Amino acid sequence: MSSTEKRSLATSSTAISSPTTMSQGADKYPVPAGDHNYPEVAQQTYPQMSVFPQPSVYQQPQPQMQPQPQPHALQPPLQQYQYETSGKDVAEPPQPVQKRNPWGLSPLAFGLLVGLLTTLIVGAAVGGGVAGALSGNNNSASAVTTTTMTVTAGGAESTTAASPTTSSGSPSSSTESPLPASLEDYVAPLASTIRTLRYPGCGTSSVTTPRGDEFDLLCGIDFNNNLVSREDSDKRVFDITASIAYSLEDCLYMCMNTNFFRKGDAPECLGVTWTAQLATSNQSNYANCWAKNGTSSGYQCNNCISARLVT
Image (cartoon, rainbow, N blue to C red; front, side, top):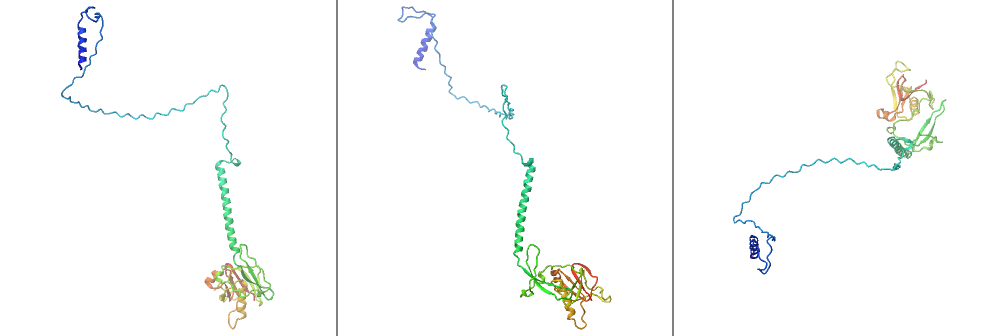
């Protein structure tokens, strides 16, 4: 505390403790009356200082409570507002116009119909392309010329005609050439390369060869071997010879020439059996025409034709 403040405090204490009233003229300055209140001087207090440091008191920290998570409050329901219309109808917003499927079909039925039509169109296009490719391959095949034999009845001589056949997708058509000499250096295809021959059927009941030999035709019959002969019950039917024949007429010619060139005790050809399955028969027997020393009731064979010599 400064000296000035100490003097001020001392003066104030003296004035307050002394109730004596000073006279007005005794001092230079007039003395105030006894009932005059002097302002109190605030005394400043200072904390007591200690020479020795006070030990500090350790306070154990209190555990802090973690705030419990509050459950999420449910969202308040949407508030519906009511609008006053003032007695007038409020125009509703225009609803979008839904497009109807053709013929009033449901979306599922319309989708199935579209899928079916698409499948049919794609299938027709693919089928047409495949058919066109196959047709082009067939039309580009080389033409094969075949020779047919015409046999006339009544002992007339036969005529040979050349008929060119063109491979195509449609059934083959043949036309007779005016002269047999139109074919030169002709090479017939190998028997192993021909799967089947044309099956003529039995349109006529009998056929006569150029040398006058007449044969009765039996369709679907194979005379076979080791069966009782119709001509002689004491004999068994067996094969005299066999060869490749591209037609039934070729097979009949073989029987005809066997009898024509027969010498001594050589057996006579009394019938033949011919099959149209050329490749299969050639693979197993190297022949599809057999000359017989007799005929029999035979066995059924759908691709065979047998002929009996009429004596």
